[in-house]
Length: 416
Image 1 (cartoon, rainbow, N blue to C red):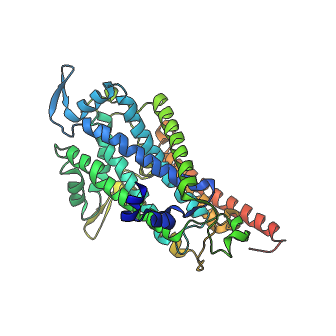
Image 2 (image 1 turned 180 degrees about the vertical axis):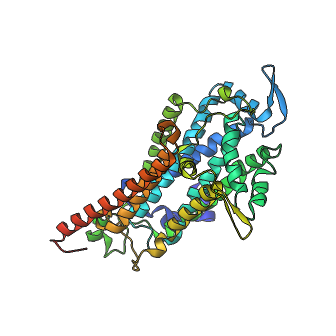
Image 3 (image 1 turned 90 degrees about the horizontal axis):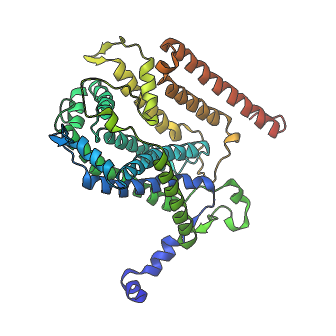
């Protein structure tokens, strides 16, 4: 049987060319697999949920009350055997996927694995992160509870605040004024078809580039005889060794996700109820808290016009600030002074400026997450701005100074 397939598909050549490729044995490379496996779990659970979900706002009867069909279908899913668990698994898989992509980008940054020739994959990784956030945002609305509608409305007003083209963007994404009868079908299409297509395309592109360029390796491999002066990747074959490790790791990750989903609930849509006139107390998930916290620090009356375009707090916090962050991340490989190709992992301790810059940025973004809770912490916006500035400056100065001292001592007192 194998011979019959091999004669037609040349399976042996395929195995020799692709399945025999080497996978470096470094634990941090599993972070990328966490993101991939979480996405697979999202697709599987999403198919189940999509078959039972009704993307409509028409009013239907649910336990004697008239509610939107989208809301009613989610309540019925929760009442099915395993229905609520699968919905929780879907939710927590999305959380873990976004966190894993972010951790993977951090690993690439701190080990300088974004350098030549891997700049393209850095851009692809940023694209995967951004599209994953957009997928999470479109999924917010689908339960169509009072909580989800309120949370999504923040995005609507941010879209409308884009100077000159805000009305066009909001109409394109939200199918008119929000909420409208066409918004839920529009978001359902984006969430289950358009965005997954983009994610699969970028994942495939990422893997193709990775196979072509190979992984970066632990620095210790540089001195090993097997490396043949850096021309040969040291590790284990993708098939069957790495495949077996990956399969075992996937089931372990699935166990962790199911365990989390079993004991940690979602926002209970039955408690919030369908969309109503009142606005519930809500806070977005952690990955949107950066923008939410930044918006909390902007004075509500800050508004001005430029060339006919109106700049509002939503424009600054929801459009300009995220765009600035994306540009900074995208420019990192282009601004790095190293020109030689790099195939080995850099030690973050040996890169004082870039490592300190990364720590500074991480503390700054973490402080913005904390800013999302200033109402709970009872901190005034101006005081919180001071805390953000002080914490960010202290993190940069302390980390850079310590790394400089470490490298000076390591190099016998010479400056680095």
